[in-house]
Image (cartoon, rainbow, N blue to C red; front, side, top):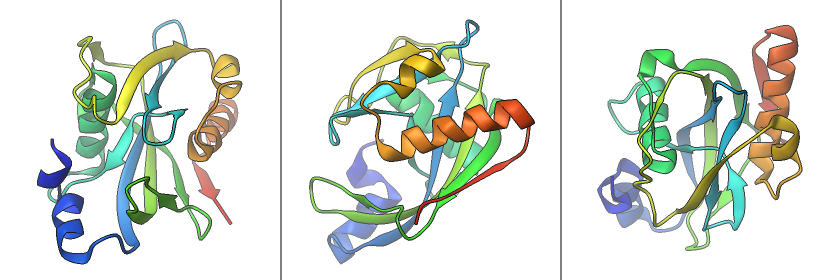
Length: 168
């Protein structure tokens, strides 16, 4: 979906760059050999998880599945996305290079059932995707939220407890 056609894109046409509270979804996609899918985000020149804003009418899982497909080319059924964490807080803000400001409230999912279409639809934002072990991923130039989410995923796999990431 083109940004101008999205809910946030339409709101931006009305309010400009002012900070918005947004609902977003991030996905930790895990391959059969336990590698994690990361995408290189051009806007921030760093590795991140497939993620984006939830559209009006989407469930959290539908929004997450759409972003996983658009940014990483991984097609998953929404029912195969399992929530394991939230991330929010007064320090959890995104300032985009174009001047758009957001304060997201994010639900984070993991998924290990998907089909790789080998096609990234969002080439405006995403330069490439790759598969990394958790240790390899944590050594990369990661966006701060991706690092926090991967650390929360590691804790989740150790204790199977839902994680609440609060960024002060």
